Image 1 (tube, rainbow, N blue to C red):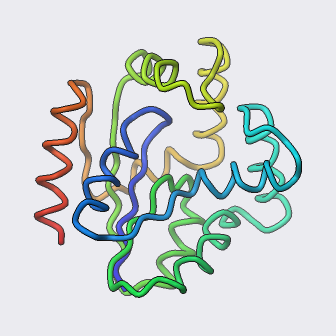
Image 2: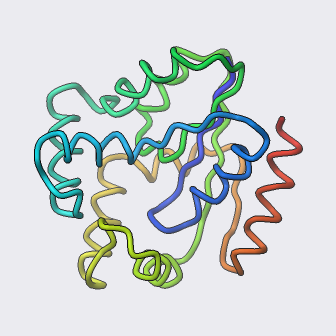
Length: 179
């Protein structure tokens, strides 16, 4: 099996890149959904504070690769030779996927903090940061759990400072090249 990991800071455009692969018929597993679903399973709203607590709790109980380990059951149920994992945040998670797959390619989507903050606020998802301070705290948390290492190890870097249409065009071209 071949795994393509799409990573990047919150609001960088990971979902759009993953969608381009999905449009070619490749299944997508969203790691953030695992944390949001676990928060809801625990009877919590999937807001930034609760998802932070759940993510840290899962990692404390099951190691730094905990979220990836949760994804493996879903991954095993797929009948596809290639899968996209959206939202990998630590080298330990990469290691979980690398132990499972024959090949792992990491794509990083990068955008500046100001651009990402605006996007997160505009998309109105329940875990959007209510303030710049909350946004910065989330960025620091993401970096502290290992996201910076994943970004540094990326095989492909997409710079997403332009329009949504530009990102979609870049993503479509990349998906066609890689599949």
